Image (tube, rainbow, N blue to C red; front, side, top):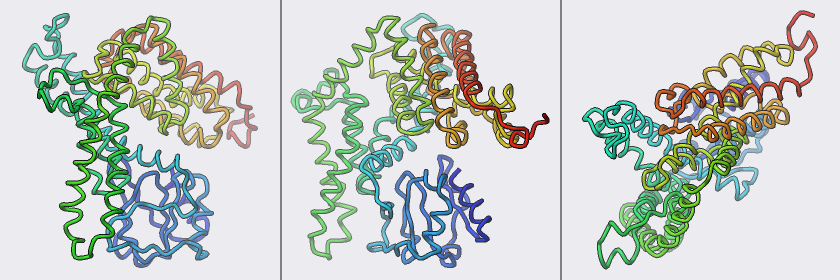
Length: 469
């Protein structure tokens, strides 16, 4: 969206622009050395750290991605009118993106968190869906303790999927830490995440009895992420005082050794605290009655629509995927939570699609065409399909979708629907527990969101909607 907004505005202003995008599928339309050398300046509109060594010596203006969507002309003018500062890389190394117009502490934390989540998702989705396929395949083992791996075909999917899914917390921790401290933070972050997942503490060192370990879970990993990053950053600052002759061994020897040791000691000391918190939380969730689990489903479903891919959405999603982790001990309750989260995330695009189809006079022709794509986006559990509509009319769209998603999440929990898969949307229906009622919950939530939005929005006149009177 930011790329499209910048490209359209530059064309309107009579300027040439080339926009490189760095999404979950990798970099697209990559800038060449010639592109950069011939550019008047560079705009970085991103919510994660970007390697800036390519832009050394160029005017560079950095800002959150939301400004790229909403203020493309202002950003272009920052460069064209000479207000963008010249970027200088220390030693030509990769550097974190510094926001030229100031950056709040909350946005920094969000940027680091999104860096971890974006790298974690392929492991969660790939491993989780493979694990779900194992349960689908293993019909002979249904109802037995070996369900999911009682036959070789199921064991194949579960082994591969389980190993991939098990990397979730270390990957999250490693990439949050590397976002904070750049590459030196990667190794300490991974180690911190592993320690959080395993639950290692000082008592373990005396017995080496792994059966007594209790995982600190997602809460411990989240602490380890930021602790590893800032510990490494502190080590880097201290090492800045060392002689320049040692510059070459810092990243290869000093940073990984001291950073890994530091986070290891910290997690050994604090893991018992996180283990107690995680055990209490999981016990509470596992003991929820029908009415309480419905409330939780309602809240998590609604959170999926608050910002559609932003921090609230990701917090609910990561909570749901963490509940699927076998080490959480939640079992079926974790799958109920995940089903509510997934159906809540499916509602916003579907509500938009239904509204643009059945209430055409509330939308422009361009909106109606874009709305058709949201059927696929919604069925595929891609909440971001509703973002263009929410950005254009946040008051009506967000409130309507939040209500619809909350209804869907609550109904899914009330019907006892379960999902062993962390993604897939309607395409994963085959592995959903009580699939018919899960789809009913999705439909009811989408219709509710559509009706609230459509009756709340004022009809457009014939010229705006492109419809005949």
